[in-house]
Image (cartoon, one colour):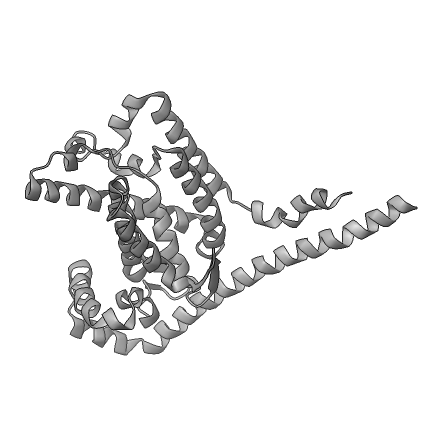
Length: 308
């Protein structure tokens, strides 16, 4: 057995272990891309075209699963499988599906409202008739979920080593920067930004935590300001306060009173969430290392057998 033959065994744990839910959604993304390629008129009914959303309201849901380009569908499928493999064991299949649905439809709704507002401001019909679609909103939301679970885990991205808690902010910064130079990327910018924001809103205030009987994650490490460097936090804090009142309808004084009732419980559950995420990640790394060692041990034994 050659070294090249042992390579699949070494990487088996990386390319396997995807759940039925993630594989099923990957098939939907692939079929959605094929549909709009074979039948271009289908994009009229499946993608988000703000001028036609009122009669075709279902495109608020379907647009998120339609990738119009080959690179887009590849990135979306790979991202779904890898991020889903990390998050589903911690959240469960039902919660992961709920998260995808909520982030997808809320992102599409925000993009729709933004396009309509921009049309009334500029009177440019391009905002109403440009087909918008893509799974990037949910992928960005997955990054926020990873930030919540393993914020201090260092990840290697090309030549950079960055903590997981900064990845959503980095993606947002890159998206904005690229859109300034490439007009083609403008259609992806609102999807990415609203995906990050709506997923944070859901995880911060509404996700049910059965182990605690509470909702959301009120820890300081997952606050709106945690997405920004220290220098910008005096600006982001007032914005976060306004957004919180709009979303939850509570005053800061009332929230502080509620926090005073359960300070230890909130802190304990936030720490448990991160510990679970860290253990799951360490377990996967251990499995990959075991697979590599197993393949290395098998190779010398088979070579020795061949010599005999």
